[in-house]
Structure formats: C-alpha cells, structure tokens
Length: 77
Image 1 (cartoon, rainbow, N blue to C red):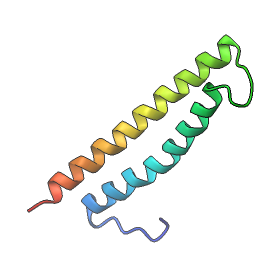
Image 2 (image 1 turned 30 degrees about the horizontal axis):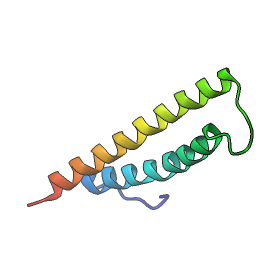
Image 3 (image 1 turned 30 degrees about the vertical axis):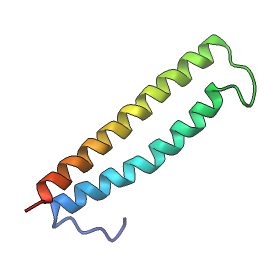
Image 4 (image 1 turned 60 degrees about the vertical axis):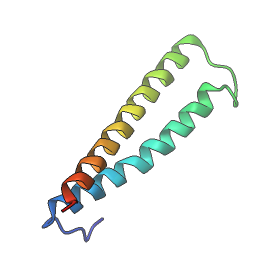
C-alpha cells in the first residue's frame, strides 16, 4: 500500500475497501470462535463485549462491501 497512487479515486476507494475487509473478516472469525466457547466458557460480560465487537466488525464489512459496490457501479461505462 506504500506505493499506492491516488490519482484514480475509484481505484483508490476500491483498494481501501478491499484492505478493510481482510482484517475485519479475520477479527470476526476469532470473535466467533470465542463466542462459540471452543476455548472455554465465557461470563456474561465477556459474551456481551464479544457480541458488540462482532456487531462492529459486521458493520465494517458491510461498509467495505457497499464501497466496493459503489466503485464498481461508477467504474462501468
């Protein structure tokens, strides 16, 4: 990303959206693993915090997907 040129706003937005999706998706997988109690039981406060974090990750993924959809639509002739 260090060499990313910003002279094409659509390409830039598409790359940013793509870069947002990978870490949010990975975080969701880890949080779902915790929520599934595969590594041990959760207390109610831990469960609440993980559920909130999952919601935020999901919102980030939705935002990234919307951004990608918009850039694809604007890029069509």
